[in-house]
Image (cartoon, one colour):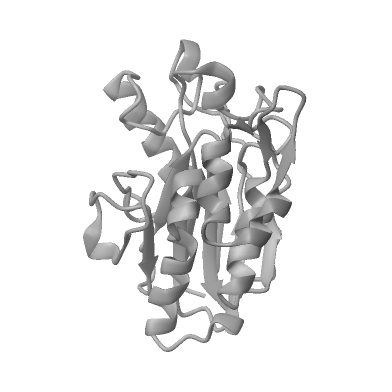
Amino acid sequence: MAGTLALIRPDWPAPACVRAAATTRAGGVSAGRYASLNLGDHVGDAAAAVRENRLRLRRALDLAAEPLWLRQVHGATVVETSGVGAAADAMIADGTGEVCAVLTADCLPVIFCDEGGTHVAAAHAGWRGLAAGVLEATVGRLTDRGIAAGRLLAWIGPAIGAAAYEVGPEVRAAFLAADAAAATGFTANARGRWQLDLPLLARRRLAAAGVTRVYGGDLCTYADPRRFFSHRRDGACGRQATLVWLGSG
């Protein structure tokens, strides 16, 4: 998998100044279970390999500065770009070249921009963060900036699909406690447990927050071991990144 980075470019009608990408496993120097473009510095991989992988990412995307990595904690805290390194699961930016980034290996990465190309945001939404309202909190921070929710676009990056994501009744109960109609995101299986459709529930929550232009959500990390890391599939593994930033034009 070493060699050229294989990047995914979001298929969404964002303004020309909005730049975004999602990484795959290909193009890095990490070995073994982290092969090869692991971008997570908290998963047990060699620090030197992670540094080289992040440098390769910057070069491939022609970034002037390091992406603003968060210390993700499966919550609903949203920070500004000054919060780099903070314990948070979403970030918003309005400055050129300030790269919002989230790391995932099954959780939902969701990026945002407004139709005027003035703000971007990235959110990390596993089931806990999604249930806690991280997407609504991100939308709220953007609307606090004077951007109507109806002017926002969102793209859902690679994440575990419903066919592979089995959860227990406590996860279903956490969602139904806030929204009884969230039951549409759960399908009972033969083991008496539930298959959870994270992208469906994310779309539902975004729509309730006023964001109706939502794209992506069709790339399953679990089902594609050649391209993606998956914690549910492999246990200890690397992390891919989903990034969004404002370019100069």
